[in-house]
Length: 323
Image: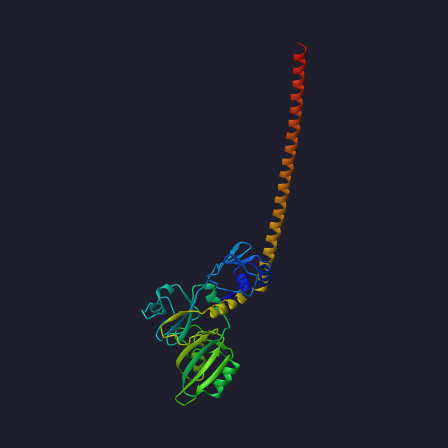
């Protein structure tokens, strides 16, 4: 569900303020009935909203799904070596969906996919938090914690990378958060939040300290949580999750300059329509004036014809009387 004013602003050239005014002016209808409350909740998929008689509807409805990737699956469309890929498990109707970022072969957990290349690019390059649960071999050291808090730059970040990776150096931003769940000599577990999605970032990070990542699972991405989604299963986002994604995409795509351009184009369009209306009125008045002239001329002709007819009748009378 979405507020009416937000719905109009999102799916038309109206600004939020203009949408509010349109609603309050009584020119907005939902299902054929005038709606005067900008805060009225409408269903984005099914609501029939009209402004000045023109329907407002989502023109580019995007779909985003959450998938619980299993270990041993590749995030790719095709593998020349015939290994299992995510599309072998996903429903066929999602075959054209684009992964938002990647999880490596041995990593499991939340993977978002979308049918919009624009949305995929924006979210992949975003600073939205990704939360992981990690199990490493050995203890979590003070040096690791210091790097998690402050970040670090490595000229050689090849440890922990794929053997064919061309990425060598890497800068790690400070973790957005981390919680140590267990710290022991054999295995330690922690939950971390990062705001980047670099190639095998966490594996490279811990490999720098001589520690191997034994298990890695993504739990959430930009506030969208894996929760209890079973392995190898997918789900559509909830309405609130969709709203969150859409708001973020809008914040990236609709810059101040773009909003100003939308406003300028709308003003130009309104001015053009006003000019056209004035021209049409002028033409109509000219036609009406011309019509009145024709009527007056016809009236004068009729009068003259009447006079001529009367004169002829009088002449005939005189001719008859002379007999």
